[in-house]
Amino acid sequence: MKGIGPQWNDVAADVFREIGNIGASHAATALSVLLRGEVRVSVTSARIVPLAEVATSVGGEEQIVAGVFIRFSGFVRGSVLLVLQLPSAQQWVSQLLGREVTLLSMDELEQSTLAELGNMLSGAYLNSLAQWVGQQVRPEVPGVSVDMAGAILDTVLSPIGEVSNFVILIDTTIAQRDATLGCHLFLLPDPDSAELLLKALGA
Amino acid sequence: MNSEREVQQTTAQVIKIGIAEGGTVQAPNRLRTTGLGSCVGVVLYDPLTCIAGMVHVMLPSAHSCRELHPLHTKYADLAVPWLAEQVSNVGANPHRLVAKIAGGAQMFVYAGGADLMRIGPRNVEAVLQGLEELRIPLVAQDVGGKTGRTIEFDVITQNLWIQTALKVPYFI
Image 1 (cartoon, rainbow over the protein chains, first blue to last red):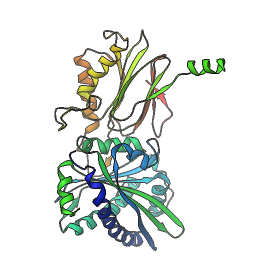
Image 2 (cartoon, rainbow over the protein chains, first blue to last red; image 1 turned 120 degrees about the vertical axis):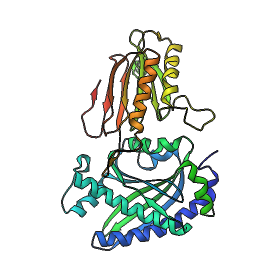
Image 3 (cartoon, chains in turn brown, blue; image 1 turned 120 degrees about the horizontal axis):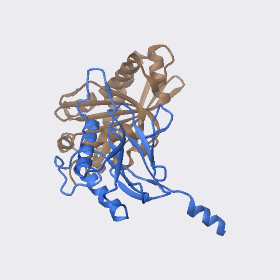
Image 4 (tube, rainbow over the protein chains, first blue to last red; image 1 turned 180 degrees about the vertical axis):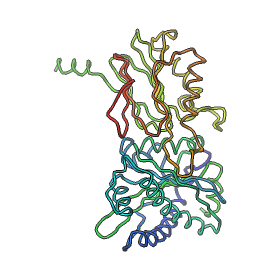
């Protein structure tokens, strides 16, 4: 099997959990400043998920979710997809903008707020990845979509589906005061970068 | 017991087509695929025999892929002829086939500009080309835009129902 194969399962999940933990602490610092209060970010699990099970892992194909998609380049190329349950995304954007929002029909400001939130979170994880391997990773402009999980995932997964059968999923919990939000972060190395990433991680 | 069994037999079943999958049905059964983003749902049917097929294509062309044995139902250029053959095999007249398609959205909104991947529009173009090559008339389409679609085809009424996150379900 080419690309991300089963050989990733054994070693890589541990490495990604560690990268996830460091990323989470970066994210917590940034979020605490942004949301003006203590925010705790923790990784609940890091695992390799077969493409066929990705939709189930975010609550089913027809579940409405908020997705932030970011391409990155550098020593490896790939994408990050951040999937937030709609109530979580709504709560964050509302808090940041200081008014109630309905994300199903977003205006430009709400879109860019959601994009910025995604940018910050995935940036924390990408930096953590870059530090781990001592290389540079440059994220590009984020794209956002609030829609059926299946529709978001098929758009993001189809280009890599040509050669890969697995993605890396880091599940994160973000706690602030009494509110706890769940967030799924998918790391999708481009097919020609998967091997390189694996080597660089020493996995 | 007998009446119960009869009810079960006359109730239409909904056959679910997954990503990069295809299948056929005969009336009164229906075909359904959920969460079409940039993917395109293609329905081919014979209005007279009420036989229909659906495929959920992911990518435009198998030519650029690196797979040794590309999946016929994954690439638009292979999926259209494959589906035409499948419905003909189960009794549809290939000369009577017509098509309805939906999907091919550009899901992500970018602050900076256009979506460079453009997979949705490219998928639609490839499906249209495939239909043209087989001279299958396209009788209805709901493509492009920025929203995902779940579709269900009813062979009896020949309506393709479309469900999105925002709008009330509608049909083409």
